[in-house]
Length: 65
Image 1 (cartoon, rainbow, N blue to C red):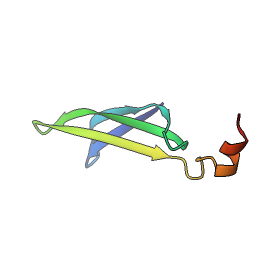
Image 2 (image 1 turned 90 degrees about the vertical axis):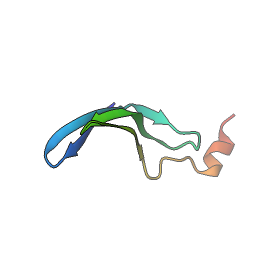
Image 3 (image 1 turned 60 degrees about the horizontal axis):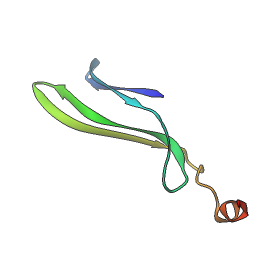
């Protein structure tokens, strides 16, 4: 799991957890979403990190039973 810091200048104003995820496309990575508050306002936040090249190639998926 990744911990994502959201900063304003150098001050951390929010934290977001991003656990590992296997995406529908077959790619692997991390995904997190949530609501954070700073400066008296609420925001909806999403973060997505996709490992480049992690999606199986078509011939790899065809070989699996």
